[in-house]
Length: 316
Image 1: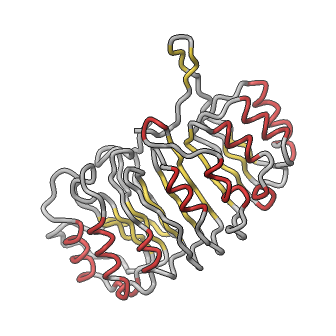
Image 2: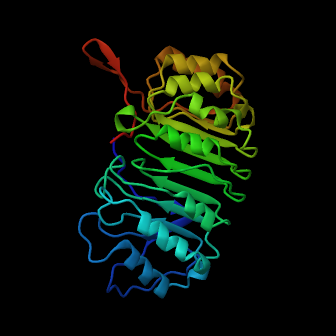
Image 3: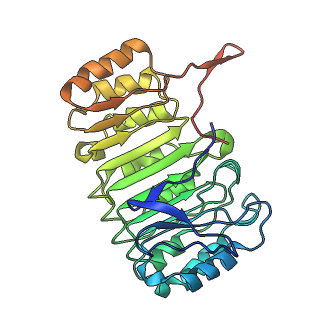
């Protein structure tokens, strides 16, 4: 499956795409929408930086609360360094910015694993009041350890996330973080993180306020589930998301036989390879305790030369 829809909201605000050059439509109030600024990935009459310059000239940016970077020119070949530089340079013009997402593209713009990313942490340094930050695309993504006092939500969507990024996030000090969402992806598209790389997240020592954890879209979903069955961070969670990956009976049974999960409000396992008897046990044990368990999208493993092959929901 590919990514086939753009973000519909950010920071609780509906998305509004900033118009193309020459448009005459009336613009909404700066604080009423999440502004999406995007240009054509393949052909465009202007660069992303030029579109952003029109935006800052047309909108009272002091009121902007949420900003979405869509596609930039040739995103399949060029990283967003000019985009990051333009945003950092405009930091004093965006004092109210609280949410930022980089790379909101669908497959028509650029497949998720073709999106060239880069060093994104300068944005966290430039905007110390950010509460939500996210990005799409793992190719070339760089995320060294940072400290950020205000960030409440971090979401990294990829078809393949490098171990260095996972380790950088794990080594970061994010005392206010409540939600962490990592799409780990497929080894065919650069995913090489192991459970050991996730250890700092699983202990939660640098994430004292974490309540919502998603480690999903992974080819090692069973191994992650086994590790989470005894991970200290789980006891303080309200929701756990292991969806979109290759979860099978091994991982699901580990969740059932490990530490209690009945305190969770939701356990999201959609897109999985769990057998019907184990699904019934999950529902009987956790569903009966009031946990919302999402076991939708039951997948069938493919047989490749007598070898079972499972697949993640989003790869290329």
